[in-house]
Image (cartoon, rainbow, N blue to C red; front, side, top):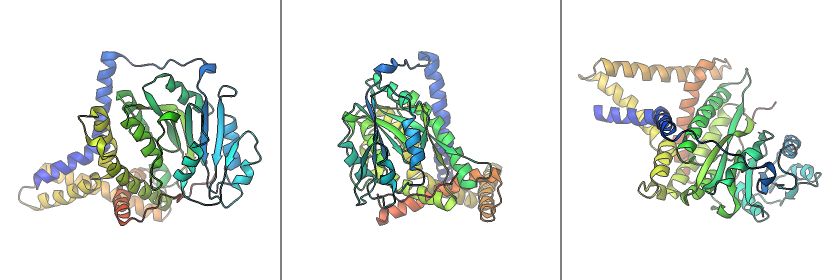
Length: 393
């Protein structure tokens, strides 16, 4: 029982804290030996031609703001093309986009899911680089420049931008928890990128070389992750660029955030199964280490080991061998989960206590993994868009 407890506790700790600590130490050692690598920006006019692809589904409320944001992006004249694909939209999103002649619009009435729309859009992309972003996110004006400068390095096959969550003082646990999560994720991605490669890109903002783009199956749930990881599988690096960022509002509430997280978790299990070749640490030594540590553990076994750590801790303390260390660890676990429960109660009563948001969000996130695994194996997770409602304003 004690062995089971320590294994469970170690895996849970390593997944969420230990890997970050280990990465930090490795990066410090690497910098001490080789120095810190600095990016040499190419001349502005020598940046590669690029197409920005934006998939939009029923985004009439925000599409003008997105268009204004897109047209304000800095990039060499004549080298940036903009393509919106609005397949399946039933509001006036396509009509609004059609008012702008400098934007190429692709629209068809049938809704087949985002990835089908993206594959269709890719048939019209003839530039060296393609950048993907969502219709409900706003980019900083130098995002395209900061992303495309990396392609001067021929080992780079994809570039992941940073996701930032807009948080207001009155926001609930979903906003505060999501914001904290993405700040931590950004730190891990910076270190992943500096070590070797980022393990997957988020759809809010990422880019690939056009000739490396490989269409994924139409039932792919996390298409952005799969597209980028298939490029990494070919031996190319995915670079993280925090100075290119997409800002979006947090989920409207915890229920909406949970819906989004369950979908991601179902897609995570699907991706782990489809990318099983990346477990070959002899073929992909660094990539496998980063992929398993940063993604696979979170999406598969860690939530179960968290439960095992708590239950086995209780059984050890209840038995004859439950010494002080086990008692203290049980108190620590019970306190953490108690704070999460209190955060849940406060959330239901709409009482904002930010100190409780992180443990509550952490537990919601791990519950979502369990629910996502069940949903995937039941075959009830569609690849089609099922948008979570976002905060307005």
